[in-house]
Length: 157
View 1 (cartoon, rainbow, N blue to C red):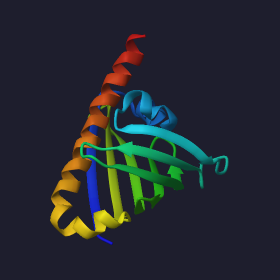
View 2 (cartoon, one colour):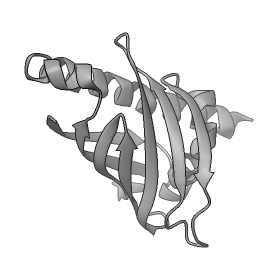
View 3 (cartoon, helix red, strand yellow):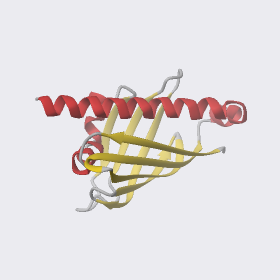
């Protein structure tokens, strides 16, 4: 199984608490992030969110989709969330938030260390690795743009 190390940075013009609220409310992602088809709660987890499991259905810029289960393994509100990934990809991810320059800007860093699990992805990974990385970057960039727009809409409501 080919392994991918993918890192993405977002700069969001909003306070950390506001950004955190939107990011952890993943069941609303399909309303503002066009590549997220659906999010389903699979397991509640404990009072802190540990072992919370949600299933995500993603479309991509390319003609394929992904189903991912994310289980929260560590969480510190307004700072970071670590997840274990299973489904069409397997591995781990972390999302970290920090104030950027002022209290009204947030830097979000996503780090994914995942293996592909779909047979066709494994067969072609050596040839398509740059295409998969490009696709991931596009999906994530659209997420950043969409979150900024979503927050602006909320602010103006």
